[in-house]
Image (tube, rainbow, N blue to C red):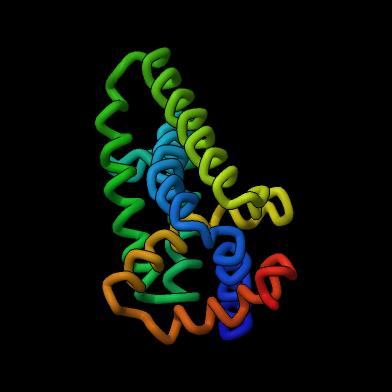
Length: 177
């Protein structure tokens, strides 16, 4: 598990290097939740089976895998990220009874709107999104944003240091000097 943790921290370091501008960070705190909501809502439309009265969907499976990975790699960040996903899942589940067309319209609008907001942030950053270099970065956004909040609250300082040490190698050369 230690090698998974090291890999996870490396990915978080890369994400940090591409999100240093405060305006970019702020846009991501809006855009990422919108995108997560849209993806959960869309994946909830793909049922797999029922477990009692609980419907297992593709969203359920994907979230379970992400929960496990995040908690193993960084327990505090992973636990808080799992709570975030649970809240977003519950919000998306509220729309489950609506018409199929309205569900897809909401999912699509949230997805497109979330990306527009993030691309505005990257215009401030002056750097393309990290996921254009490494697609895994799309999965790093939620735990990184949670980590940023925890760091701002004065917790997880050791984790913050580990991420920042790794971020240096992904920063533009003129920034590192």
